[in-house]
Figure 1: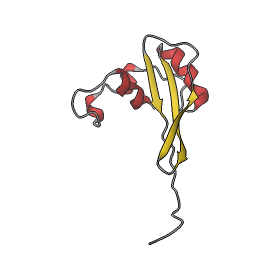
Figure 2 (figure 1 turned 120 degrees about the vertical axis):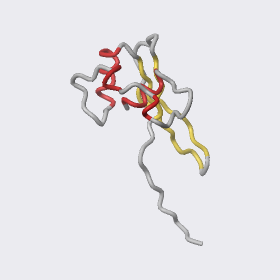
Figure 3 (figure 1 turned 90 degrees about the vertical axis):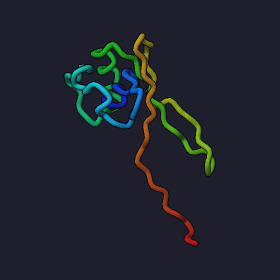
Length: 99
């Protein structure tokens, strides 16, 4: 969560997949009282501490290769520093047939 917020606030020009291209989250974010992994309940506290607004979205599978984007957390007040995040849930689909 913290690295995702930092990568949105401080975009890297080259090699955005490398965390070395970003300031360490502990140097730019206030995390007092925040426990990881982040929960939806903690996001509003994080927003207040850091003067950042955050929206979190998920993908819902509609058909075989079609997904819709749904909000799972929407900020109450959009700030100058605003981040949209995509929550990727760990899932595995069991194949029904083997060829």
